[in-house]
Image 1 (cartoon, rainbow, N blue to C red):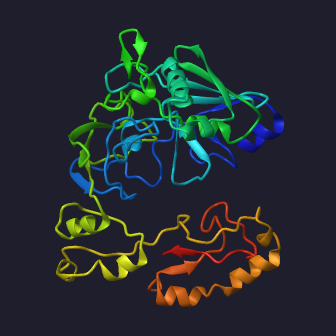
Image 2: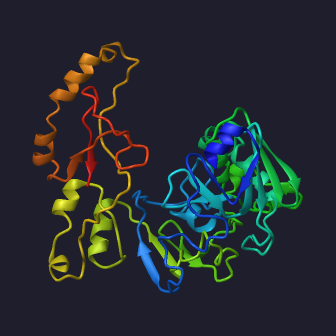
Image 3: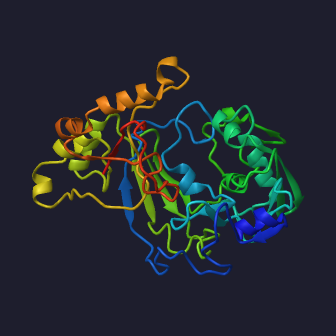
Length: 374
C-alpha cells in the first residue's frame, strides 16, 4: 500500500501507515501477534530507570530544564499512531482511527477516535492535538521537539475530530513523525482564560490519556503508576494484552553502587546491566548462589547498541581513507575484549546490525571496529 501511494500519487487512507512495504495487520485485526489478549491483569513490578536517573524534580517531561519522572511518556501519554514489534516503520491508529495522506504527500490528516478520553473524562479533540503540537514546537519546550517536527509547517483543525498536518516537502517518514506526537489536554496549564508559560509548568499534573495515571510519589525518590481501569483504549486492538500490571513503581538511587546493593537487598525486581565489568564481577554473592536472584543473558533479535570510534571527516587528517583503515587495523579488538571486557562483546557489522535496515554486503575495511554488548 505504501509503494502504491508513492508511485500513483493518489490519496490514500487506512487504519495504519507504512513508510516501506506492506501493512501486516489488516483493518479490524484483533491484537498484535506477540501479545496474549487474555493476559491477566493485576500485580505490581518495581523497577529502576534504565538510564540510571538519579532524581526527578518536575512533572512536565517536555521542557529542557530539570528531570521528569522515568517512563512518564510511555505510561501516561497516548499518541496518534503507535508502532509495534513486528514492523520497523509501520504505525497503527491509537488516538487516530484513520490516517489519510494527500495526493501530493504534502500533508496528512488524522481522524480522532470518537472514544478517546483524557484522564479527566474530557474527549480528545482535534483542538487538543493542535494545542499539543504548538506547545511542543514553541521556544518554551525542549529544542529537540522543534528539530523533530522541523519539516511540519503547522496543524489545522478541520473538524471537531479531524486535524491536518502540512509539510515543508514530501517525505514518506513525516506521517510517522507527526503520528508519534504525544497529545495532552489543552486544559493542562490553563489558569482562568490564560495559559501558564509552558516552561513554567513544573508541578502542574499532566492531563493525558494513557493507560496509567500517576499514583503514590516520594518526590525525587520514587514514583508509582497505577493502571487506569477506565482507560479508553483498554479493549482497542493495539492495546489489547498490554499494560497488565496494576502498579509499576520506579525507584531512584543516587549512584550505581547504591542501586546494585539495593537490588541485592530485594528492594526492586529487575534491572539491566550495561557494563561488562559490572556484569562479570558485581552480580555475585549468596543471593545469586541460592537462586533468590537470577542472573541471565536473554537472547533477542533486536538491533543492539554499540560502542565505537567515529571519525570526524571534517578534519583533514581523517579525510584520507587509508588513515581510517590504519586506525581500524591498529585497534586490537580481540585483546581488548579478552583483557578488559570479559569477552562480553562481539564485533558488529555496521550501524544497523540485526535490524531490518542492515545491508547484506561485505564490511568495508575502512569501517571502524565497533563493539556491541551481547
